[in-house]
Length: 407
Image (cartoon, rainbow, N blue to C red; front, side):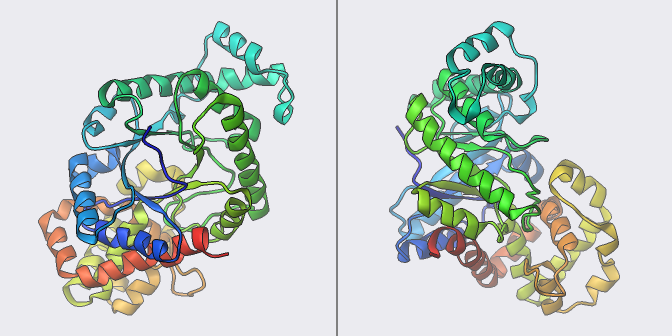
């Protein structure tokens, strides 16, 4: 079976120009004695907005691996796929994030719920009573069955054991409790899905491109409990021995990395950290740092995003918090030099010039760059040195080091 390594990093390369810079971060981690496998991820929504296809992500990843001499595993993730969107990813990808969050809470078959409760209810683990098992099965069994349908469609095309399966349940209203997560994994085992990573929803806010908002002590408690659930599920349900948690919208959660890192090392557990937009933001920062035409293009991206704010924010409304009153006008931003622009967008909360609302608007504004077409892509090539430096530094120094390397 194709097996995902203990530590893995999901990286989004929206315009297929930063694969080498992203891979360099994993090379730097390997030089520190920690193997972190890159997983290039891109969703159907992102492909549609940009006008790209999964083969472009495969080509960029393969070229980076060849050019930098990477001999360790790497993967391509069909991110947040569903039954109706998976087909376009079958040729290029070997990792599938099956998103069934929209099916949570849909009515389940009464007989299936009863049969599940007969097998798993009232056995004492995590205080799960039979009524609780029935409640959990009623809430999640429709979603798990759908995950099984999608898995079997991929299996029919790719063959048994030739791809990695992740199941995502994070884009929903309420977090899963440890008993819920345990029984979700039991249902996935019953469904015959050899899940290697599971992405639950945690308490608190995982907004795009900014730090976690919530109770750190509560998060640590949940995270450690979920690591215990994973270990129990492997032992009890025959799921793959490398099963691990996946943290979505995982970039820039600087307050969480030390907490998660300590727990992982104490438990000997693995983790998949999924990032995406943080690299796009570093592209914009790199353009601004290049000054001249690069800075002017970065300002133009902001100005156009400001004009299209409502349109750009709507698809991401549940994972951004933008205060419109804190968004500077186009005139103000046009008067900034490179240092001022970078200070406003770079995620350094201790810097008084940092503007979280501006950063989040640019995060969702990649459609503006996509509409620029070759003009944007050619500027990426002209500013490659500054962009590559920021992309690699951001991933290695601010993500991999505090999470996987620092003791």
